[in-house]
Image (tube, rainbow, N blue to C red; front, side, top):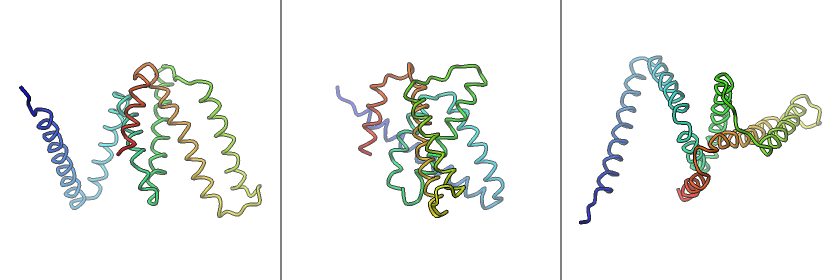
Length: 183
């Protein structure tokens, strides 16, 4: 017998996510109306919760962030991909610090080290532009910083993906990322 359970389940999930979004928006608006400091505290607590969850389910967070990154290209004019890159860098550096403090190994390979050294050398151009050593005006400094952050985010994303080694099959990662290209 054929049933339509899948459709009912997905519509129920969409209804729950929509309801949760409306509830969070209502509470955020109420807190901002009463006292903006309360909204800041709630956002801070939410951020801490997301960070704890990100270390608890690392694989899903990394794949989710890669999916979200593929969706942000249409918002390039508002500099959302650059802001997202800064967030990815902060997450990767935080993850590395936690791994070092807990004594766990960080998985790298030769290509990651080559890429990291190459990006570090690219950072010298930014420093030389800031010091005026290249004869280029200060108008190029903001563009060079933006490009260096973009390159550095490549290194950090590659490092995060390397941490998935042995946890998620590479075929599954490629499958998920290719499906996201259609979105």
